[in-house]
Structures are given as C-alpha cells and as structure tokens.
Length: 271
Image (cartoon, rainbow, N blue to C red; front, side):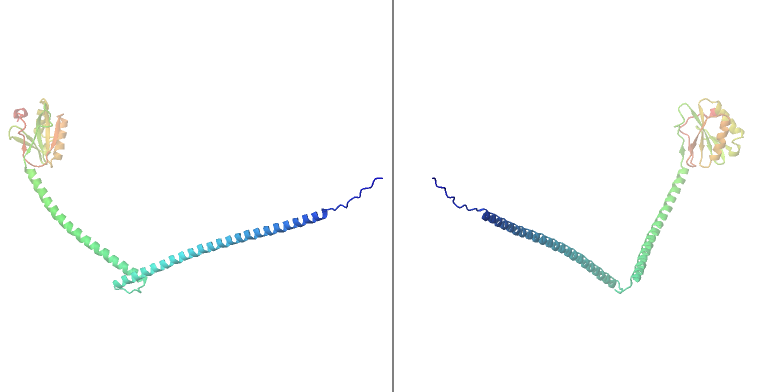
C-alpha cells in the first residue's frame, strides 16, 4: 500500500507586500508633498521679492523726479534772486532806491523813455531843418540857373530846318504870337503882320491863304510861340475854311527865326 505524501505548509507573502506597497506609496506621497511645498514656497518668495524690488525701483524713480523738481525750483529761485540783485544794483546805479515801488518804477521808465524819444525827435527835426535850408538854397540857385538858361534860350536864334516837311513840299511860314500872325519870307527879311483879331476876317491873311492854296506842292507851317496858341487856333480855322493844308511847329522861346535852310522865292507869295 502506497504511502500518502505529506503536504508541506505554504507561507503567503501577500499581507507583507501589501503593507510594504502601502508604506512605499505613503512615503512617496509625503516626499512629493514636501517637494511641492518647498518648490512653491521658494517661487512665491521669489515673486514677492521681485515685487518688492519693483516697488523699491519705482520709489527710487519717484524720489529722483522729486529731487529733479526740487533742483529746478532751487535754480529758479536762485535765478530770481540773481535778477533781483542785478535789478537792485541797476537801480542803485541810477540813483534810485532798491525798495522802489513797481508802479513808480514803471512811471519813471515811461518818463525817461518819453524824454529819450523827444530828444531823438528834436535831433531829427534839427537835421531835417538843416537839410531843408540846404535844399532851399540849392533850389534858389537851380531856379536862378534855370531862369538864366530860359532867358538865354528865349533870346537864342531858332534855326528852322526843312526836316519833316517832305522833299516834294515847299513850306510857307506864319508865326503865331499872342497879338498877331506874322508871315515870313524865307529869302529876305521882309515880313508883314496880321493882327490876331483880323485873322479870321482880315483881307490880307485871306489873300495869303488863297495864294498858297493855288500853288502846287505847298504846305503852310504855323510857327507857334508859347503865348500864341489862341492865335494859332484862329489861323488854323481860317486855313480849314479855305481848304489849305497846314502843319504846326511849336517854338520853345522868343528867339529870332532863321530860315537860311530854305529857298522859297518871294514872288510866289505875291509879296
């Protein structure tokens, strides 16, 4: 008969491993929490430190701005003090009290300025008066010179040139003055006068105009003296009535007329 085998006792490790695993898990959690708490506290401290540094820098900037403003105020006060001292020195130099009132100072300044302007105006007036006197003396001299030259010019002989009459015309001249029209011959000194009041109705001047009208290639030239404008107008009207072609030549003065440049026979005028 076979013997039955005896079974050996079996040992189970499950409870121990479970406990070990739990212990390890617990330790892991403890270590993890400790690490996290340490890291979090360090980061929070760093953040707080940064904030404190920022506040300190902002406070430093504000303090610097306040110092700059204070320096500016001090400089302004010092400048005002310097200006005040300079003003006082100037006032003392002018013989005025440094404690003078501003209104009084303004009044004195205005008075001195007005006095200075008045002095300048008086000096300018004196210069202008002196200049005016010199100009008046010069003007008197110039007027005398002009009058002298005008008298000399009026007395100078005036040579009547044929320029402007035309090569195919033969001119005949009638001098117009305030009191008469004087008909001139160009080859002799013979002349005759027609009173100004007889120019339009006088027989002699009418005969002279008719004689010129029948001649060929002739032109009547009125020589107008400065005072003979009215007489010329009457003579020109008489010439228009008889259809006589004419021209006018203003004379600048009362000088003797010179017709030596012309050669007009006296016989053609019927004189």
